[in-house]
Length: 248
Image 1 (cartoon, rainbow, N blue to C red):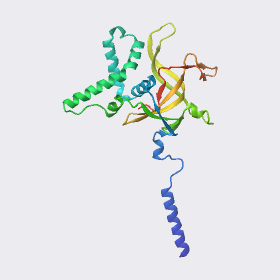
Image 2 (cartoon, rainbow, N blue to C red; image 1 turned 45 degrees about the vertical axis):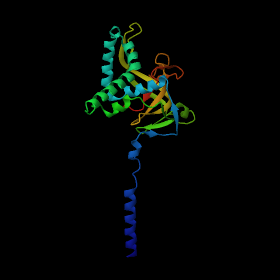
Image 3 (cartoon, helix red, strand yellow; image 1 turned 120 degrees about the vertical axis):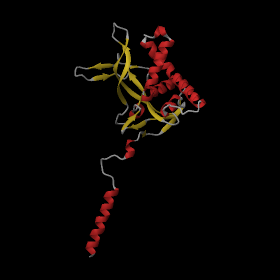
Image 4 (tube, rainbow, N blue to C red; image 1 turned 30 degrees about the horizontal axis):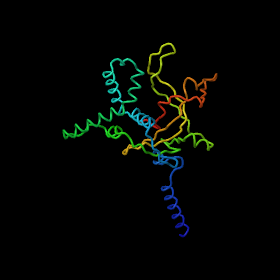
């Protein structure tokens, strides 16, 4: 009887242990949450970099795509002499879009309040249209979709490297050396993360990477085996230094 009792107790104990324990190799739910992976410090940004970071968020948020199309048509009507100049239109849109969409959404909210109707504006558009705080947190490491990203400064004192970034983007570029017309086509970009910011839109916090990008013309070479060699000292794309960790 004593042996039978001990055996039953052991089975119950092991059953409870197996039910409560977590299976090895299967990540828990919190592992999928984007989060910082280092200590933080507060940074204050008020110059052109601030506007670049905010524009990058808007450009990579699906809910703003129709607004960019509408703004482009607005520019063509306002400046008819430049309506076929793609480079001028792109530069002008990058400089003016954030203020234009903020004014547009504020006017829409006021009109809806006066008519006592509910504003038909997506929540994310309302919050992102109103520019973010100039003060936010900066990190040396951030985990997004289970992938760890670190800054070049942190990599310099580590044996592993997680600061390299590569992306393919649809971007305006010169058609050819002889044909200076601007066309849109896919282009590959290689860079190094120098800073990781967590932009504060009050309702949303969005991680964004500030990068040193390699100049495509001077810094990239494809060797005889087809490998792309990148010279990190040949920097470029200074007016577009940011990239989101994840497209919204």
